[in-house]
Length: 223
Image (cartoon, rainbow, N blue to C red; front, top):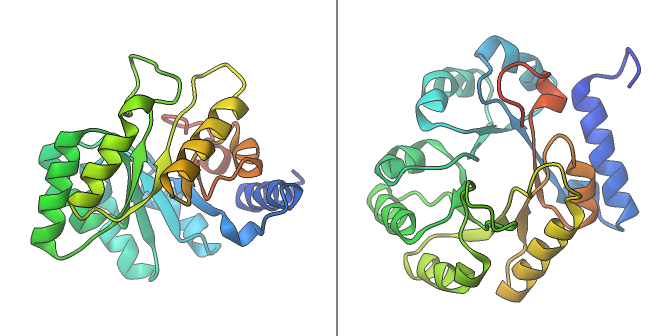
């Protein structure tokens, strides 16, 4: 990255290069700038540069900073990428344009009720615990068909699948597995890939990559 190249330019170029290697159009990949833990002044330069899709981990944090930013920068799409408590479903449906970590029947039920009440239906990604890790959210691979059936029956607009591979190992096999699960389920969306592995994810079919520290630096939690 040269002095004249911004982090956003660098990430965008990386996505485009990986997409072309895979015979895909770069425009088929949505960059979600993970703005969790960052304040409005830190986010504004990306907005000024034209970035319009952002990801947050917590409903309350997003509700505190994004209404004013959205007024100033039309066209922003907000994605909830962190775990969501069922009792926050109403707030999440009102605030976000997509919800990425739908991972259990109780949350599906809560989101279905919230969407019916609000008349607003954000896209949903079902999170799969792709590495079968006890400490991580996501439904078990074996439970995915039942969760998908329930989500569709509840009226959730299921856009695709989402995963976070195990840390410190090669992510490609996990991304490939998620892509296969999505194909078998008839789903096109794949929310996978973060700052350290988004290019690999794009070559394996990611439609949404969640990039934080490569855009904002290492302050706070890394994405």
